[in-house]
Length: 353
Image (cartoon, rainbow, N blue to C red; front, side, top):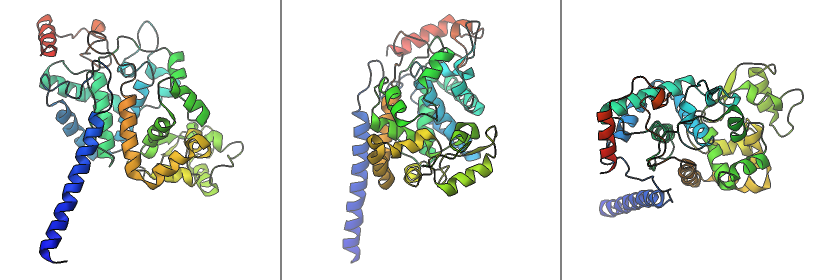
C-alpha cells in the first residue's frame, strides 16, 4: 500500500471510530430518563461537577485501584434499597440502625464512604450546595468503571437525597444474597423493572473487586458444589480453610482489577465465585447472555451502560422531594453545621435557571 492510500485508509478508520463513538454517546443520550433528571442538570449551577469528581478519583485510584470496586458496589447497594437516594450513606439515629448496619452492607468498604464525603466537600466548595450526595455516588460509580478500563458514559443527574434510611428487614429483602440462584435474582430484580439481560449485565460488575470467604464457603463446605471447577475449588480452600475464615479473595481470577468481560469467561469455565454468579451460566434463561458477553466485550459494555443508566434511576427523588445534604451521612434537619438561609435562597434560585 503506497503512502497516499495508506493515509486514506487511516483517515477512513478514524472517521469510523469517531462515528461509532458519537453513535454510542447518542444511544446513551436517547435512553429514557425519568421526569426531573437531565443529561445537563448542572450545566449552569455546577458545570465542573464531573471534572472535579474525576480529577479527585484519578488520584484515589492511582494510589489504590481497588477502591473503584467499593464505589461501584456502593451505588448498587444504594439504588437497590428504596432507590438511588443516598440513603445508604446515612448514619443511624434514634429511629433505628442505619442501612450500613444491615448484614448485606457490613462488607461495604469504609473507605468508600470517606471518598464520597471528600468528593462532596470538593464539589460543594467549588459550586455551593447544589449537588446531591446521591448524584455524587452515581458519578463516582461511573468513573470507577472508566478508570478500571471499562466504558465511559453519561449519567442523567438531578437526584435528591432521601430523608430516611431503610429498615434492616427492607434492606435484607432488597439486596439478593450471593447464595441466591438465578430464579431468586430474576424474581427479586423484576420488582425493580430489571430483566434477565439487565441482571446478567449488572452482575458483570463482579469483574472487579474482592469477597470475604463467608460469602461463598457454602459452596466448599461441608461438601463441594459439583458445579465448581475442582482446581478452582481447591485453591479457594487454601484461602478459606474453614467456614469461619475471615480472608478475602478476588471476584474475577483472570483480571481482578480490570473492568472487562473476563468475569463471563470465568463462568463458562465454572470459576464463578458466588452461587449467584455461576448459576447465570447454569440457568437456561441467562446462559446464552453469558456466552455472548464472554465472546463480545463491546456487547457487554454497551449493555452494562444501558442497564446502569436504568438501575441508576430506580425510585429517584427529584424536584421538591428530598434534599441536598450538607453532610452525606446526616439529614439536614439533624445537621448543626447547616448553611445559612441566604445560601438556601441562592441555591433555590440557581435551580430555576
